[in-house]
Length: 536
Image (cartoon, rainbow, N blue to C red; front, side, top):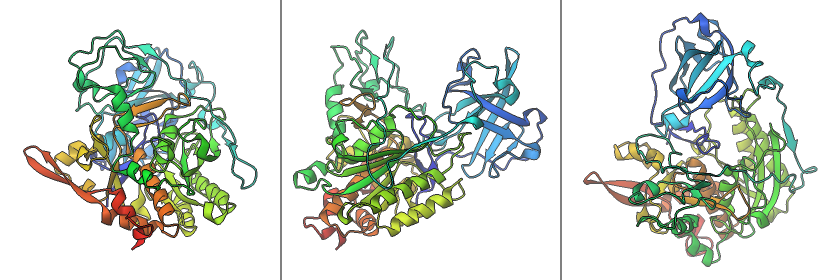
């Protein structure tokens, strides 16, 4: 089984998912005292590199990490985390995050390495949270309130009824000309180094830049020059990315579309009016949100369209129930109790639906571990959902099913239906090619080079060259919706078992040799030729 770790998908900018950990630090460092660090520190910025911090910039709203509290003797305000001089130690995530001091304009700043899943799994360099002592916080521009003063809001439909409680506004993305095309560095670990969403490249000469452009993220508002280098065709890439792949569209033509099946998603705020899924969105609610008027997020639109999108989705006729939530506390410490409450809310709604319309799957693009704050409550809620007959998918399914999975990579112009087009996902390719075997045991489903609904407009789309485990969760939920249509009596356990049994190996040539992806999903084999083959 994969060893799941939380991916803080700030890289998307979204919630990161979980997968096996590939990069770890030594955390059993001896304690060395540092009286200078003791006390409460509040976050004022997040920067990819320490030198990018500007003390004159206002404190941005919505920083994920709100603060750190260093207590005497190496203790912190979280019992599972400690510190020694120069480092914050987290044995569970196996990270030793360095901290340093720097005085700027008479204020002492603490620069803290942010070693999320981008560091432990994607092998990316850590960014930095910049913090100040609590006493210095109030005088900074933009510091209007302390984190502990933040309130949360719910937007729920009456009783257990389904409905659209609010329609978040479209995401407003800044658009600006690009002065020069960046170069793709496969060793940088920066997922967004080729982010061209909303950018104007029309004045650039892109001759000879095909290799870089084939790692680009772009959307409908990206402006490319009229002359493009051979081998880069953004319109074709966008269309290929919409295809769920592995023969799923052939199943649609055969009548398996998820029609009559209800599934649910718990994620970030959703653009409820997008053409990909608006006509099948049966319910949208918000639970424990820090911003009652938050705009639509890219993550929500993506996972919804991958699951039930009209052109992007695995189950384009399935009906969708959606809960958006901020599952952290006012200090931005993860609190999975809110995911648990969101599951219970969906179960309550499902209980009021006719038997044939009850929610069959709950897709949550998030990972967790036993011992995380609220993890036991989350596992209990998952247990209640399982008892109600619903499949619950997170990026840590091995905690409650005999099942695991990871996402596949694909070159942007490769045929999505051909299993030979797939290889290891970008974030785990390096380890796989080096011979690591942990990612070969679970189900493999498409992840990279996907086109999804964009949160920027009802008819807008975006191509993500590098996905994340987040994209694989709704894919599997969509497959289960097809299975439920084929056989309404199928159980989650039977489906997961059959998905692994029917998966097929794909051989890759690498380094003059051959490597094998053991269990690439085979949707047609999984669903069989007859309506009840799935459970035979």
